[in-house]
Amino acid sequence: MLVRNNFHLSYCSNIHPGEGWQQTWENLKRYLPEIKSRVAPDIPFGVGLRLSNKASEELGMGDRLEAFKIWLLENDLYVYTMNGFPYGNFHFKEVKDLVHAPDWTTDDRLDYTFRLIDQLAYLLPRGLTGSISTSPLSYRHWYTSEEFRDKCMKKAARQLARVVVKLYGLEKETGVYIHLDLEPEPDGLMQNSLEVIDFFREYLIPIASEYIEEKIDRMPYDAEEMVLKYINVCYDVCHFSLAYESPQRTFKRFRQTGIRVGKIQLSSALKVVLDGRHDQEKMELLSQFDEPVYLHQVTEVRGDTVKVYQDLPMVLNSKRSFKELRAHFHVPVFLENYGLLDSTQDNILATFEYLRKHEDVCEHLEVETYTWEALPQDLKTSVQECIERELLWVKEKFTNSNE
Image 1 (cartoon, rainbow, N blue to C red):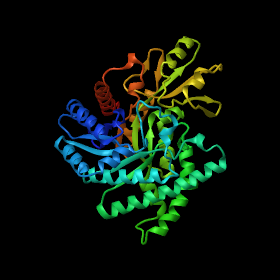
Image 2: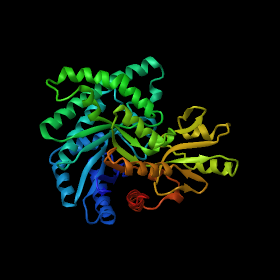
Image 3: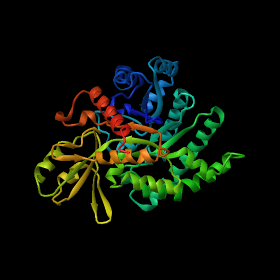
Image 4: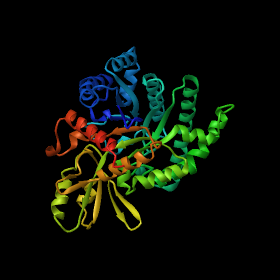
């Protein structure tokens, strides 16, 4: 749905389990029309679609894609963005670092992304821009040496160059503009804005530009401009909060270097302020968020650097004293705190404030609270109620400016 005239807002359907297409569609049919009736009864409602590789393959069989498009039109729904980060299983079974597999050094990741591009191009309403978020290249701890990491970066840049050529060809032939958005997160090969900028400058732009110049005759503009047009960044507010970066700083850095923000994912991380008051109780509350499915990296500021702990137990079992910790756990955006624990909701509000003044930053907004079944029991309501409440909270806070 449109908010503040030109921003598309929805939620990411990765909150709903479903690795195959049939279960995915059953969940979409169950939740989307009802949620739309509550949050956007009189206007079209956008869909942030997550398809696993398996679901994407199955959607391409027979007339399923056509049937899905007809169903969307009949229900006044439209797909404008996809989540192409998790390739395989994403619920109930252990995911952890496998969320990055296969990474951007592989043809499996490339083929999956190509298929999502084709499917989004078919579903996307004419005149709209499409976005697909994807992984930050790979998982940092799979590449322990600098030499190994350098090879990974080069290979990933070559693969992304092929994406640029495909997206350029798609737009030239059909007029459909889609961008692929790299999503930095803790322990990804890109964790923060400076690492994104380094990858673009040192790897992606020079490697992809050379490839593009070989593959495309009579380019309409400079190869570097093509890279920056088709490869963007997915700004996940939770992830950049874990990097202790303010939205103002991050968006300014990207603007100054020509890197575009293709999609903004709205989510909060957990924040634990340890100031000598109820510290033991706070750590005990934090331990309730330790669950076996996802990685929950924890970050803290040490001097001029941000220290990343690979998973929550590393902090819970530590004998060190901490002043402030932030934990990678996507919690509902409408809650500022959880008893003695806080959230990074303030970064979402700061993002809204920036967007009000700089409306050209990005047009795609997506609420992403996917760890629903992993939340402590006392924080749960129904999934549908949570989604509706999150969307209405975003709509109210973003639309009602203090200007």
